[in-house]
Image 1 (cartoon, rainbow, N blue to C red):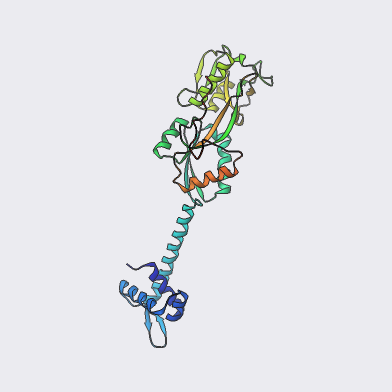
Image 2 (tube, rainbow, N blue to C red):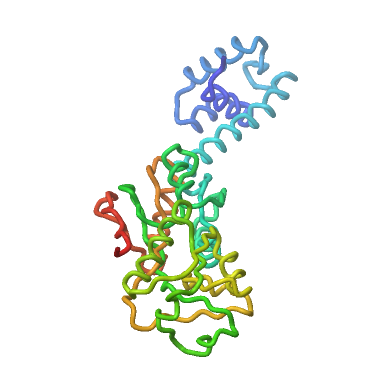
Amino acid sequence: MFELSQLRCFVAVAEELHFRRAAARLHMTQPPLSRQIQLLEHEIGFALFLRTSRAVRLTPAGQVFLHQARRMLRMAEGAAREALRVARGETGSLTLGFTAASSYAVLPRLVALIRRSAPGIELNLREMVTVEQWTALRAGGIDAGLLRPPAGGVPFLRLEREEMLLALPRDHPMAAEEAVDPAVLDGQPLITYPPVEGRYLHDLVLSVLRLSGVAPGRVQHVSQTHSILALVGAGIGLALVPRAADRLRPVDVVLRPLRGTPPLSAELILAWTGADNPALEAVLAVLRREWPEPDQGGAAGKPEPAAQPVP
């Protein structure tokens, strides 16, 4: 099979129709150039040039081959350029898991930033609860995940901290208050996150209740924040939700901060298990450079475990 270097020699001679000028153009001497043309003709089985003592002309077959040779060289050069862009993280694809709650505020900002600062990277987005994302990260099903702590010993960037707010029906007696005493939850029905799929937020809500010394009445577990808010609006119970829930709050629900409780907040992190995908490296570089105060988990890419909710 012929080589790309032989094609380059052929194209140079075909365009110059002069071996000496073609050799000078290729920064080589004429004998090696002639030898490359001979080897190419031997490989393909037909003559490319008609040579006389005074002129060099392309054969009819050579004229057809010139068109194809140029096309093959363009393809090879294009493939090399594209591969280099992938290696540099200028293009490529990134599979990103995200929780439903992250799509309310952080995910749109993250996607907009990547499109602006790394437009050659294609994002493949997969909505998954945090537990599913950890499984997918370890199995290589996703490159990174936008999820809740703890990070479990993998590298991560902490992108967001959100205050936990109390969700009440708009007609609740305490809805008009600027801040609500957590005692309002004592003995009241509570709608909160499940202990497995939503473990992080579930434990965080329990922390607020324990620190406030209140015990709710009947507790119902619902996975998605928008469903929790819908049930609050229907008068089924009260709920503690991250501040981002305000973006999808129904008109019959109000969110109020808790008065006199420790400043516990829900965190959202971007975690990954490896950085062998150049597109991931590029996205991380953009986040470290342009995201408002990203908090790198651990030193040298080896994070400390994220803090657990206070029992």
